[in-house]
Image 1 (spheres, rainbow, N blue to C red):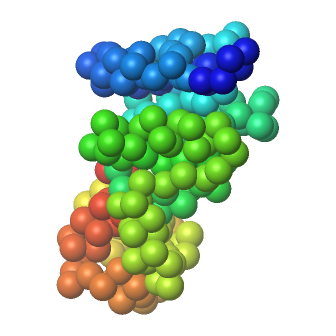
Image 2 (cartoon, one colour):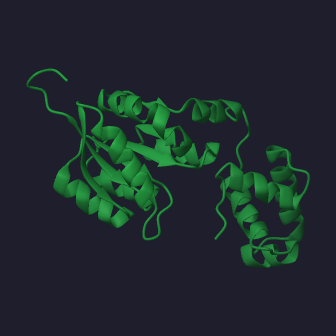
Length: 211
């Protein structure tokens, strides 16, 4: 760290104490980075950000009170220049795209924390968008795919909930033939063998979440 310059201040948001401790230990070894604060939930993260104004926030996606995505949207709604790195186990391309559209400056998989965290913090602090190599590959793999329409995603949600075609038609106020047409499109776009396979692919890619 250059003499007179202050360290990069990091807010760590994750509901797993061991991961928070591991991140703090990694950062403690770096003279140019420091942990400004830690918290375990999305709502708490917004409050901490207001108080601490960290340079970089590490944000878990799946937390009990408020998702990391919603917390990031809340933070960036108040502080548009906030630099947030998503820190997660989920590498689904649809989820990555949602996070980037919401303003994430980086997307780091938790299995890469030891090897990539410090460089990611420095890169994001310097104003660069930073993705784990695995994440970039996942995005590139599906970049040319024809995405599901909102109507098709809605049908996939209802399939995942165990509804028959008739029940889906009744809930959406459409005909069964329309439902069947949307399911054909879903299977084709996802490269799925059947309805169950489509749900599995949808969850893996982050297109839908199982409640």
